[in-house]
Image 1 (tube, rainbow, N blue to C red):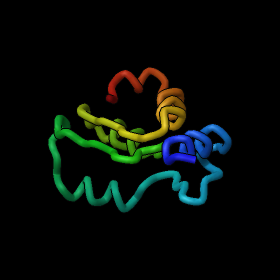
Image 2: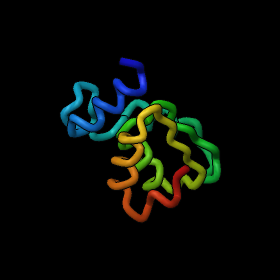
Image 3: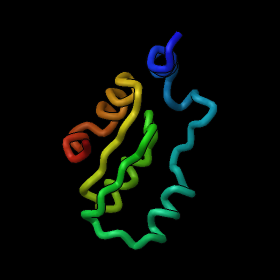
Length: 91
């Protein structure tokens, strides 16, 4: 199985909260981003974002230039669904 098929299978078969790496909030990442004192228009990319809630927390902090990148289109679709109308603010 290739890498993309592997991750598509993971995000299709499992609920995001059931993954061993799930965290409700990525506290350390948020702490590091907060410590950088970035402007709300700073470009932020979450590489390998999967179904992470980092994007939710960044939107809540007022960031406006967020990109989420992942090999799994299933993960990105789950994130879009979770974000609802907020998804239009993310690339």
